[in-house]
Image 1 (cartoon, rainbow, N blue to C red):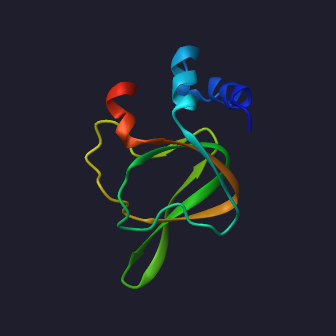
Image 2: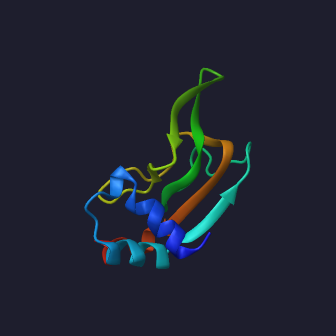
Amino acid sequence: MENNEILSLLLNFKVFEGVPEEQLKWFIGNSELKYLDEGESIFKSGDPINKILVILEGSFKIFITADKQERELTEKKAGEISGFLPFSRAKVASGTSRVIEKTTLLCLDKSYEREML
């Protein structure tokens, strides 16, 4: 996926409404793309939350295990953000992810937080 295609997607995501194009270009330039197939996991319960995950295409679900039973917590779809969020106190993932259809993520490392803000 080319940067222009990514920019076009981000400009149409409600979560980025009003964000200047130059800032989105910075975000894209400092991020990495990840392509995942159905059934793959992005993170497991207890993993450190150290990346912002922008879902460009596809979707995944997050499951938690309680009383030895797995339960769906939420589903994340294209146009949404998951993972590390500025000012969040969450340090580790509370659930495990499972990709439910081919998914493309744009991932920005937490180390860019200050520069991003």
